[in-house]
Image (cartoon, rainbow, N blue to C red; front, side, top):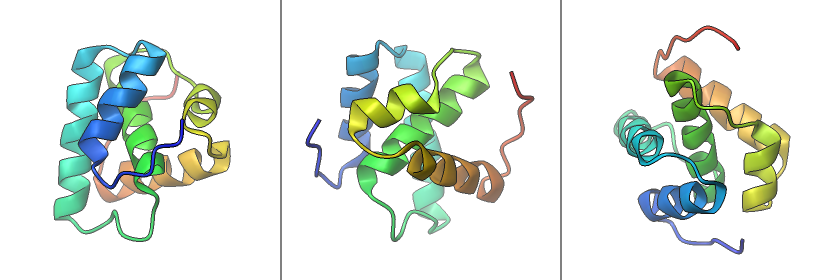
Length: 100
């Protein structure tokens, strides 16, 4: 995908559009990223990885099916990077949802 921008919000829109993720999940992902930035937990991570991870969290919260692999392939990063950022967001923001 070649995304190098630092604007998480534009990245969320691009990734969501590429994968057909709903606009409601994209809006929620942006809120998650805003909260993460306010709590200063975004430092040291690639913006594209954080955007993809926030989309993954948003999809899980909304019950929209999306795998870490699909996101990793779409943004050209590893599943492990998505997983680590997802767990960071989930734990530090206190997000609670049951597994599929």
